[in-house]
Length: 479
Image 1 (cartoon, rainbow, N blue to C red):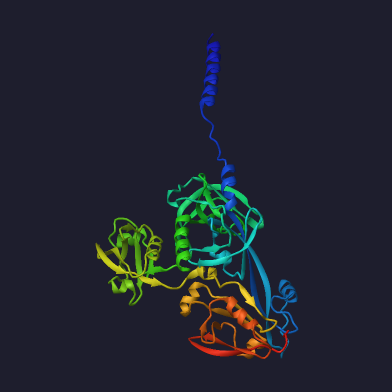
Image 2 (tube, rainbow, N blue to C red):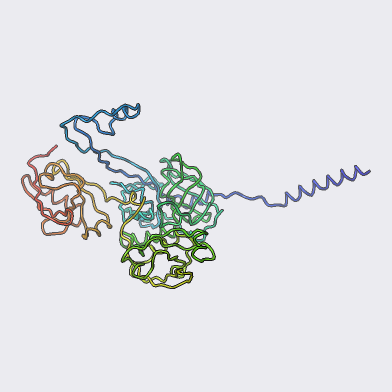
């Protein structure tokens, strides 16, 4: 009888358990189909072509020659270059792929600065297979953001979200062209926010486990609402492929950069002229702080903004314009986002007492660290080498500002008539006669209008000076 009751109780328990499971709603995995269908049309593929210049001896391969490569592979000493033969520049075309997305139906495209850094020519391909030649409006190496423009209208555009509202654990998706495979979709979750990376002091990265590979760079990171919350920028990898750690630039940061690039062609940043380090628990105790935090000044630039405000090594910056400095990476982001010449309120810890100091923000001029590799080198390369032997490309807005001109063409190569005129590589052509140069087409038109034997005076900037050079149209095409 007792066994019978146990059996009935067991069956009832199983029944209740099954009913409970049936009553528990199943956890549904996210469905990205609508997101991809709606937003995918605004994601573009970016292909670039760059001219790589190398030096090799005439009549013999250089360090990149196949024969040299064989010697290197099998451990033999590389053969010496033949004596008496001068080094000659050689050129080869290098191509690369990336991604981007349309933020304005008038044709503005956002991508990574490193995607177009070395490019002589940039092409944007839409999902409807149309291709456009892109113009670089501006590129910011420090945040790895670039703004392009294509001549098209009524284009599909993405919806811009708010990366500040993004939560760790939230589902996100990326669309791009990994390894050249167009419009590939990958998904994952947000692993962390505000992540600092070595040599990257301007961006509080979003870390995800979304699969990002070469070619995904510059593509959008979407939340489940179909809004862009980041630009896929970097991966952490020992093999060169995806290993579960991907980093995206918050869209809030990227859009601020894009707005400034659109308005000025470059980004202006503030600085206070200090070297900082993390405040460990031991350092916090030794300085009399109750907990670790803030940015410890290990050095102060002489006559810099901080020095003029009275800051000194050993001070700990606790707040900047009322915002607490939790880690050292917080300070450079806040400072660089402040316009030069404005006054910032800084709270420091000195001699175990908090003090308020006013600092007049200076101007940060030069990209540092790994960002130098992402600096855009110029516009599309153009040449008239058969006739004049001149290869030039447009200077970007930052370079123009440094030189102090409104438009100029950087000389990449000068042979034949150009070399005979005295023009050299890295010269800047700034004018024709007494008129300032305004476009590539102006120079090309003036050169093409010359008859054999006629000359054209060019104003060339070299180093800190400028001089006129007269280029003569050859009697016949030179090879």
